[in-house]
Image (cartoon, rainbow, N blue to C red; front, side, top):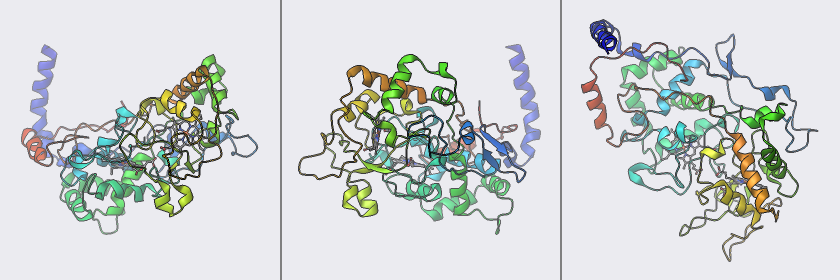
Length: 413
Ligand code: HEC
Ligand code: HEC
């Protein structure tokens, strides 16, 4: 207790000296690459993982364990990744300062939000569930219906949608440019910025950089795949074998090691009661055969992101597996014609086999590299959710006149 008191007194004396430094000092961006990445001579972060030792999908059989991963995005600097982390958690990115990306993609909820359908601006219920962001670095198309082709393009969706963060490009630029700390941080992350002004491109790029650092490839399944047989229990191995069997065919679409083949498939998953049919990819590609088609989601960290499917229809993994077992097209609404994928059939799994598949899905969990939530943000707003909106910023600055100096920002606890 005494030591604590002495320490507090000491900091009281020391703080004014720190306060004299530029307020931006407290938000020094990390110059270390996140775990899983190594820094190149150019100063960018390059992903390193075990799967890079395996060649390709060819000749290994679908669902084989020793297959390589699809191409991925990397090559961002540590500073860009770290700036993206601040932006991702900052409600200042929304029009009224109330929500951040993390409001719907919370690290403690598998980078989803635990809800069947996400809640946008002013409590507005959206029609779809928030996907996890783990391993988005590997995705070629984004959104359930595959309508965005890059993370940069994707970010503009929630930022400027009236139903989500409801910002405008002009206001977003103004908010960040008026903030001295952000100005400094952008200069650090983009030292050769042409006009020395924050640009929208830099904002999208930083958000992308941060999201591509969310790597989860060291689950118990991965250790098993890399030859450590004891990483899985007998029931889990049984589940893996059902999962990749020709009867269940799960691995045809949820192809290891990413557990998605990144295609759009029509499987006929039902909407929650009372909701109209979501035609999914039909609208994006203007193709009737894609009615009810959705991107095959990765199943990594799947235990963390219930409820399941594009509109959160299924509460549990058991219910989801059971959906496949109930037979091809059983949930397609009457009078609707859907071109169901040929791998959707009638697996007739026993109740035990379904339980084993669920056991197996539990081995895909790895959240070791969960990034740290910033304690303070350059905007002065509380990280993640801020129901009070921008008014909270004034409160925060009023209460905290002296910036607390943070040492090197670390990514992880
Ligand atoms: C109001 C809740 C909400 C907010 C805020 C939000 N998202 Fe999302 N996010 C969603 C939902 C819902 C989807 C799926 C929408 C769809 O597919 O039509 C989604 C999809 C995504 C995807 C696609 C993932 C995939 O597997 O295809 C990415 C990436 C993403 N969001 C990143 C972000 C970023 C970055 C921000 C902040 C700029 C953000 N989100 C803010 C709810 C939200
Ligand atoms: C024809 C391709 C295909 C096959 C085969 C397939 N799936 Fe899927 N899976 C999908 C698609 C597409 C979705 C998303 C559908 C939606 O949201 O409406 C999905 C969703 C899921 C989800 C929910 C993911 C989430 O994030 O909400 C789980 C779990 C799942 N599948 C497990 C399985 C299992 C187990 C099997 C084998 C019994 C299987 N899948 C077979 C394509 C397939």
